[in-house]
Image (cartoon, rainbow over all chains, first blue to last red; front, side, top):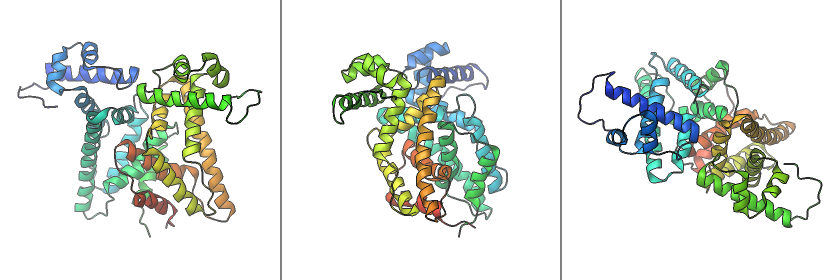
Length: 191
Length: 191
């Protein structure tokens, strides 16, 4: 994901190639699942040269990590509402909206695939997890600095994100009340 | 999964064919992912006739449902220890052991694949979920009948099983203390 030393105009050729390559990856994951396509096939689908893909991303795992993180950071960015409850409610609602939408399970499908594709796959999966955990922790740290009693990032993973993902994966509905209830339950003082 | 009207000796030819076919499915999911093999390939791998597979399971989705439920029921059966806490601790420990072992993510991989393979896939996925939920509910109902204050089956899904699955999927360790802690947290009285 080293973008090299060339300068790029936003919206210029480089951004266009990036968007085309990302879309090609998303389409190919949807059609064939991960592990059933190559960098060459991504390039062909995106209408760019193989060398453009290799130069920018290095290998398929780096490209997949970039697609997943771009998607997560765009569709469910960490909010900054000024309160812990506000942030967690906004974040949970964004995640729920994203994973019940088109290609909503892309990140789970990618994690499943990367988990069974050797050391490079595992490193890519860990990279996605660590980057999102880092962002989540920064949001919770802000709450701590305001004097709020914030949960640990892994508690948010366990008791807000995990149930959302597993319910969608097994075909159960996510109502707004249910999503809000997960946040309220995590924030409720415990004996 | 209608086994027909023929009588079968346990351990006889039918049981052997069943075991061979189940193993062939597990191997093919591991090698290619779901959706990338046919009933014919399962039969060839298992060394049985296609017609034996069709006669017994009808289609690939029924066969996959049978493999998943057989695996779940064998490796993490619902315990009956005489207390709610005992049952949930034993169940959570069995699930954790199973999903961190070889092919541990098979059921998640299957759910991911079935979720994106049309109405028959969705029905198969829902069948697996409903059967396991029914078993879990029976375990919790026994606790209720003993006068214990049992959580809902979906609370167990959300706050015990979902974190276990998501942590394994994203490469985080499951320690016995962590697994026991999920159960204790769910059972702790709430204000």
